[in-house]
Length: 182
Image (tube, rainbow, N blue to C red):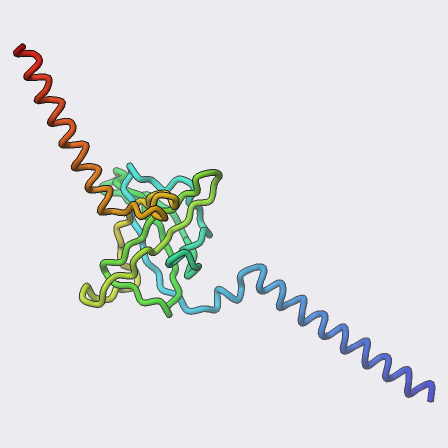
């Protein structure tokens, strides 16, 4: 009878040890991102001009679509033209389940305070433009701060503001001419 209880206790201890090891391996895989690496992805290059830059963006940073994670930044290099930097190329991997088109819009989003920029796909594009082939280069845009976009300030308002500033400069120039005549 004592032998039966001892084998039952050994079986329970062994089962607990095996479940503990399996749990440890699963948790380690989740934390290290190994499971994410098993997901099929497509590679693209997002090009930023030198004026925009990629400040705060690092390898391993998140690639988001509508604010939800869909990939990672894999590398950051200068885009060279005959040895002269003309931009910054950011290599990204995006889950294959998300179809992107040639007119997709990638933006660099920087937090108002602190570090840790990310790439956000704010528009996956349209089917009429055609599918973005893996390895393609996409020209990036700089995102407006989140508080402005939440207030409805977008690309159209940026253009209106540019027009207003140009018109204001023209008005000031005309006023200078008139005042100099007087």
